[in-house]
Amino acid sequence: MPTTRKQARARHSPFSHLPLEIYHLIVNEAVKSGDIASLKRLRLVSKQFASNPAVLGALFRKVTLTISPDRLMQATSVMLPYVKNITFQPTEYAWGMTRTIFREIQNIASTSRVPPTKDEVDAGFEKHMLQANRLRELFESGKLARSWGNMMSRMGEGVTFEVGDWAFQPSKLPSRTPLECVAFPHRHLPNDKKHNVKKCALIYGSFGEKLFDTVIASLITAKVRPKGLIIRHQVRGGSKESYMWAHDGRLDQLDLSNLQTLWFQPQIPRWDDHDDPFGHKALAIERWRLSSVVTNLLEKTASSLREFYLFPYRNYVMGWPIAERQIIALPQLRKMRTYAVYDMYLLADLVRQAPHLNHLTMYGRPLPGNWREFFRAIRYHPSRMILSMREIVVNYLHGLGRWDLNLKRYDTAARSTRKHYQNNPFNDTMYSLENYISNHGKWSKTCDFVFLEENAEHDWANDWHYSLANGRWPGLPWTDDYESDEEEIRFWKGDAYNGEQPIDDEEANAQLTRDLAEDDRAFDSYDDEDEDEDDDAEELYPTRMRIRRPLLEETLEFHQYEESEDSEF
Image (cartoon, rainbow, N blue to C red; front, side):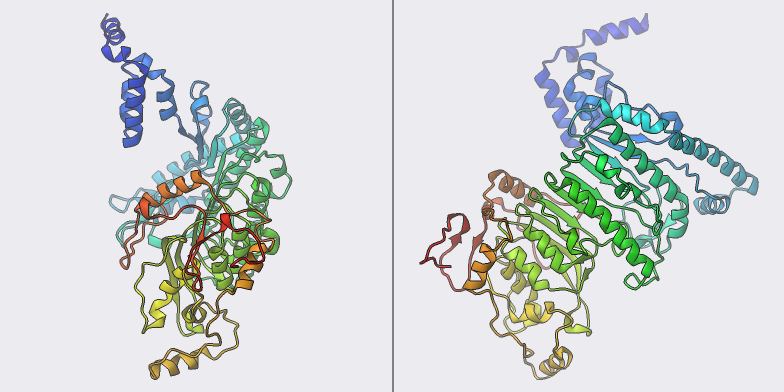
């Protein structure tokens, strides 16, 4: 009777008879504030609310499937139509575990209590391996792939599939606070300085590759056209078996014609910190293998890809682009963020062949190359762009020191707001560079000095020291080197943009304005004490790029430009 009365009260509750519009307002407010727990509790109060599509869409938009024998059928037919992002998350049971490593993990995890005895460690290890072997059998029998394939075939279009990894805790902690691995509580210090990467590879490598192979097989079986693909899994660096799916024909069977977001973040624990990242032969082989994987993925998604993120766990291991064949035209690309090694010449070509690119974030180690060619591609790009460059190492003074290039969400249509140091050209570098890439200034002596190729034949060291000693700016081989009218015509009338007109996309401009106003916590949260970010949307330039050249007083808009004999070009 109590249960019946409770159900009766719930049926006649005023909350159960609210109009759908009120339900939608409740859901929108809960999603906006992140209070999903309240939605879950309200589902228990009213069946009408629990079955509302807006509620189901909010609760099941992102789901995580933990890989374990006991949770093989987590997904149900009720929630599948509402799923837009599904993550395949590994468990802590890995068949690569050894008794020695297991004992070490338990001893480290018990630093604040009495360490376990040998018998307790042995019993825990046996239990761990029992679960791990059950999991391995689940992979190798194909049962897991068939189950996931059936599940994916019942899902709708526009789903993002993510292969999870064994992530670390956020690194924004006090400098001496240890980090922990989520799967196993063995400690990691900031920047992973005491992280034994070889042990992690031994534990996680085989599991990670099996996990992703199974996801690929399931996508092929279900004939799914994913909207997004996020790859974060652990691999065995240096292994010939790594990423075989990208080279053995399986990728050709995967339909990626609708893919709009590609996130490639492999965990590659292969090299110790003391290894030379640029002189290791095995590293070069691994870098080439991984760059080929990225190229193969982009070739399959070139016509539809809008967002591309490249974040290797160790940025010096991953390199792209590093070969001419890896330059692919990406006509729909809007956002690109890379933390990998890249070639400056090739990156400039890539920017030229992505006419809609309006967000570019770079962080990593560029190979020696022509910086001016890259900045020139930004300067003449047909779309207004938000450019972020974080801790880009520039070898200025050619062997005498190091300088890190940092740009924080710079709008390439805006004039530089930095202080202009007329009597100190070296401190004027960022002012000159920002005005150059925004078409408000020429390529100055400062830019020549800082970004000159390292193989240029000039005695910069003596010239620099001599000039400092005499209080003068060093003599440079170029005095007034900027793009002439003929160079601009040749650049614009060439085949750099395949004859496309400059972009005038109101929707892209509105989205870019919204992106400027929000706080990009994930990638651009570092402090910049030298300048305040200007997020006033009313002061932003329109999407089409406006050119302000030093020799012209008026502003030329490219979308109105027509070729004629008396053109001002």
